Length: 286
Image 1 (cartoon, rainbow, N blue to C red):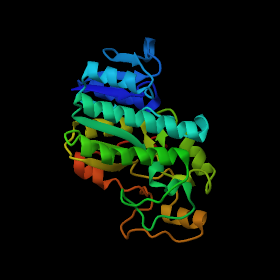
Image 2: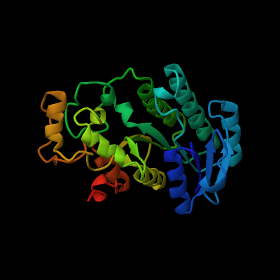
Image 3: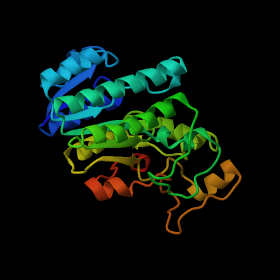
């Protein structure tokens, strides 16, 4: 399959490009700068483009005529600039990509949403249940969270205009690089505050890449939203105990929720595409 990956220079983008190329897909990476040298994946075409410029995007997609598109490019959080810049960049680039993808005949589009789109990470209010799923969310005033949720809303509308272009939104958890597991250790050491904002969840970047591949190669219709996270928390204490200590209240946990299970329920993507996270910090600890 000929596949465009936007944001192919970023940490998630680089691993996704490698995953798709290794699987035999013809990959074209779009980013602000052309990736060259040792960081470039052999056989991958790297094209510099400003995704907020609709003319550039439309022209490129009309020329390339990709079958699939993984839209990962975004300003990842408000610390990358003014809130208005983060919001407008992410919304405009997403609209441009999705509209041009539909116009150029893309058959499948995978959108990098975020755990932030759930809204839970920006409030002290706990979800009504653990694990929570794709239907459970709360409104958020955070610029990045709003931009990612609006991307999902744009997707809902795009499938009306382009019914032959299914869209999958992946609500990606806090991404950890293979050499970045010390971050999770620091969260354990700084309990109960560090990491509590997303209930001590995470996901290895390699698992994010396989999730993009699974969704791209899978079969679905319309617009579907999927949570993706590691199976476990980054804690060495029961999550039920951790929630009570941090939030001063009992969480509504399912009776079969294990002490180290993630609060993010990922059964939907497993049922749809057979995907499960394969990496855990526990495999690295002595």
